[in-house]
Image (tube, rainbow, N blue to C red; front, side, top):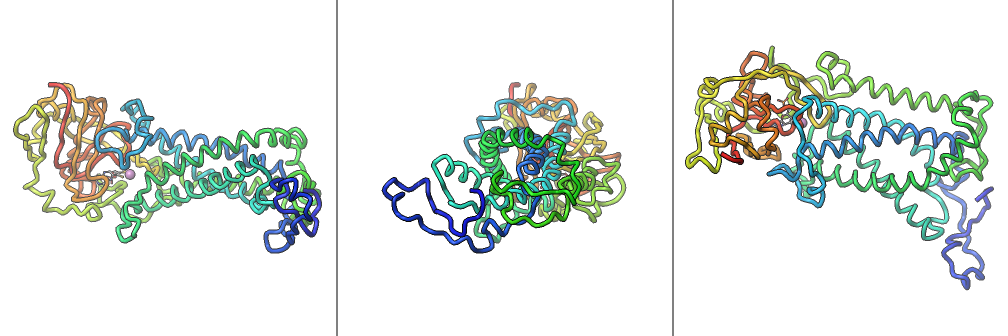
Length: 455
Ligand SMILES: Nc1nc2c(c(=O)[nH]1)N[C@H]1C(S)=C(S)[C@@H](COP(=O)(O)O)O[C@H]1N2
Ligand SMILES: [Mo]
């Protein structure tokens, strides 16, 4: 592939011997994607290898925390699966309630590693861009497999990252696309299955490219090219990689300059996002959703879905509201008013709400321990709890909690927060608060709880 002949041979490797005796099919080396039109001298194996080495650990953190987050949803438990797939069986362990910050840390890592990876991912795609127009399109069977894996690698990466960013900016807006013919196309299955394809393609890619990367570092040194100024920056030989230019322009930035800009952008994104994980520095999170007020005083903290958006009205949550407790051990459901609940022994806990979109807020919640409510419903050792909300429709109307989550004495049906009654937007008259639970399962406006377990 060295030099740029005016004409290239197409499908050299795929032609049979007989064909090979025919004159080669000339492919004009023309158009915007021809090799000689990519002219940056910085595209070489070393730069690509550096970007890859920075990207890989971030993607590993993002992927591991992503799959753990999915495990935290307990997708094979009760109604939690927003979709039913083969992967239900993969999550064989119950998500724990300790340490209480487990999901908050997991999800902050997931979102922050993903966001931080974006500038590096874009730079990496830029560095290898000319290779996407490689000719001949396919040279051999192994080459065909490698190219096909690139479809999942590049397409998967773009989809996973774009859908993730879309979701953290719009907070599950996808679930509200009722007006689209593809209604029901939810974020969770789309992001999840795309991630599986992406990670599989990435594993193949890493295996195929590791020797090339090692070679690049052996040849150029890991850090040596960082010492070269812009003026002395030279292009790699066009034989080194298809991404290297055949007709390079003089460098407008050094390699260390490029890595500095990309690293700076990454750290900048991190600095402008990390605040959403901590109440004390939330205002620094300029890239997180902002500019909303959440009510006054003790109730002034993050709200994901407002009562209005969930179509819950003051009347529904008013004095006629009753909490219904059911279990196989009670013939009739037990009905409790808010005053009845306030008359039970109450517990106060400092617990976080950690949303899947990466924001975390710690508040002081007061309410009735879930295990006490189980006992009232005739269940001494709860194994499963189905929680239903007043909310008339939507994916978060119902959720299931596992036995450990119901039995933990810190798990509450909260009635008050920071010493005040819950506001309607925070789930008045009552909401679920469970340690280390994904935010999305902390159901608001609870109307019915069905316990299973032994008496
Ligand atoms: N009924 C109901 N409960 C819900 C939701 C919802 O849409 N409906 N949103 C959940 C999500 S995604 C999160 S992160 C938390 C956020 O709680 P907050 O809005 O009170 O801060 O509530 C959860 N409880
Ligand atoms: Mo959430």
